[in-house]
Length: 402
Image (cartoon, rainbow, N blue to C red; front, side, top):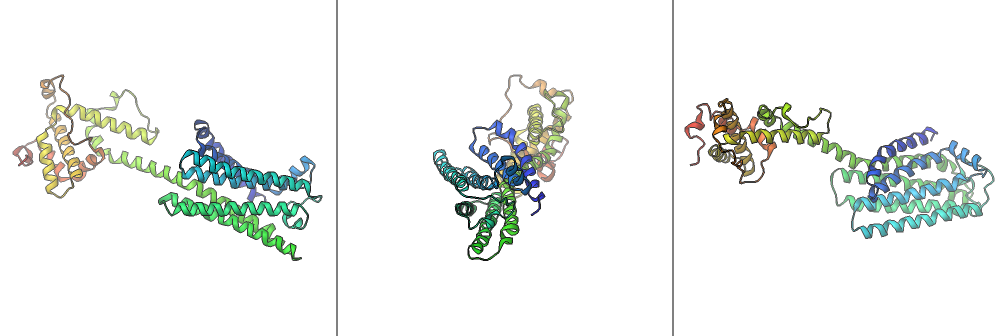
């Protein structure tokens, strides 16, 4: 793996951490936010400090040959712990149990990191090795134990992650399951990394030479595993967010017919606050719903409950279910009221209504504005209702309750 194979992922992790930092500052007390940011930071540090040029620079700056080895191994252990903690908090549960489980993993890997440093200090590694330290010092006392310890700790973390991800994936669906399966695949690559390293080391112990497995094949597996794991962690929240945005804009679009029908009754110039076109989708939907409610408020004096009751019966007779029939009936009443309002430019109906009279409330709960809006274009019942104020069949009792 070339040097860019280390630095490009490190840069990507730095950008991701910069993007996540504002959310971390806003939700500092959220353990999931903290653990995710820690995971991103450690991933970037592992890639950065595992790059051969960085290894050489650290060794030169400290004046200690191969001091990068316990540094990189310790970062890998910390990364394993961070991944486990993220999964623990992501899955959720009683806060006390989550804290205890996370603390056990953190403590266990903390002990491993300390042991790695102690073993390196006890060992003797005078010749700098930038890419093949694991096999070059595979038979050196204390360094041999350090190398085995870090590989065992990575294997334990990988197996634990795979078990937790698979168990959880069997209980969920959608993007979360896909993300968990990708994470499991990524940590399977990490397990294969350890197996490949062990194979090369055991070959050294038995007098053979399979150093290329450790020097070239294993790092590629580790890089693939970490990038797959990062993709798995990012996929569910990103896709959920994209899905939410799509759903919100879909709601905004489907509210269009009803909004256009009522827009003349609540013109934009009358808004207390104007919403820009670049405002968030949720705010755009809220503004459109507010305009619809304002328009309906202006139409209350023209609402005809007989038209609504007749339209409801007609919709049910046409095969609509009760919820859809209610939306069609509301839409029919609204569109008939719009026509009636247009036929009363002087506002005689409004002036004759009691000033203190409260708007009539629906006895069937809040109206489904999206269903009403779709019914304006799709329902023949609503089309018939639009004729009710112009001599159409509604005025002749077509929709009146039987």
